[in-house]
Length: 168
Image (cartoon, rainbow, N blue to C red; front, top):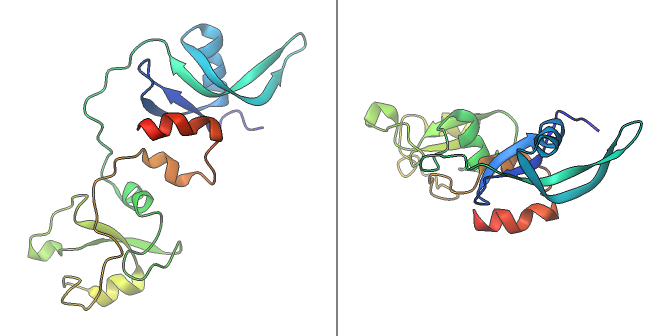
């Protein structure tokens, strides 16, 4: 078991999803009194004299004040939002780029609504044109993400997390 892997869902004192923490960090928070365990993973850390349950979900005891939830706009997050899928042809993974739907040379800005994941072939085919001019269609219109993007990188989401993610 990798103790440094981000595998524990962290909730604010108000049960708002904050992100993921490592097993080591979450156990230390619970043992130190800074957080409470909301759900156990079923795994245990063993010491010579005791067994410590590994949390699946923890809730911080103090409120972490945050401004409006805003996901940073960067290449990695655009690819995560689009689930590592070319938004023109549907090809997954591989060598993906980020494409401006309205090209920068025509006044297109770097915003969530103007950036999409694209494979190199589609990006080259589209070139310095709009998708309509290039005879291409987007699989879905680009929008700012609402759900936490760290979930896109997970292979499977633990069942214990579901109630808290539905509130997000």
